Structures are given as C-alpha cells and as structure tokens.
Length: 144
Image (tube, rainbow, N blue to C red; front, side, top):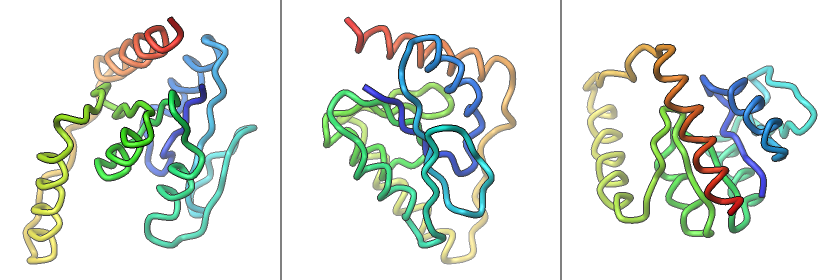
C-alpha cells in the first residue's frame, strides 16, 4: 500500500506526509512542473491537462490510497480497487460517483457559459483535524 497525492494545490500535503510516516506508508506526490513540491518520492509531470491524473492512475494499484479533489480521478481510482479521499476527509464511494460526475459535467458547462461558481470554503484547523482523522482511520482499516 502507498498513498498517492494529487499534489497540485493540495492543502494537506504536510499532514499526509506526517500520517504516512507514522504509519510506515510510502507517500508519492505527483504534480505538474509548475509547482515546487519536492520530497523523496515526488513525480513531476508536464503541463498538459490531466497529466498528473494520468501519472497517478498509472501508478495506482488495488489497496492504495489516493488523495485528490478531482471526482473524475477518484472514480478511476475506485475502479482499480483503490481508495480515494478528499483533502476535506470525504471518502469517495462507488455509489456516489455517478451523481458527482454528472454535477462535475454540469459545473464545467456552466463555467464555459460564463457562470462563476463559488470555490471551496476557507480551510480551518477543524478541517485539518477532520482530514487527519479520516486518513488515519482509512489506513488503520486497510492495515487490518
């Protein structure tokens, strides 16, 4: 098992590294070359659309954990028998993906039409605690 991180604009990278180290789980970060992430297990990809997602899915195997905000990537991860967790601590499930992907397509259509949609709420210490607990719980569950 390893934790793969969609590291472009990931607000919980240090938490993931800390929890992964405590659990003895390798953490692999993947980002485009425009982001300075660093670290011992970092994969840098080009600027092409979806390049980081493709690098992550190509490295993901059954039982891995992928941390991402991208519903499309989460759906692919689940299809490979891996686990997907959002930086907010939400564990993606197969039974919700159809609705989430439909919402993603609708939002993209609205943005192309000029509609401005609200972004995520400002992150708090409570959000960081919730994510930490969710990741620790998931790793413990997988380790059993």
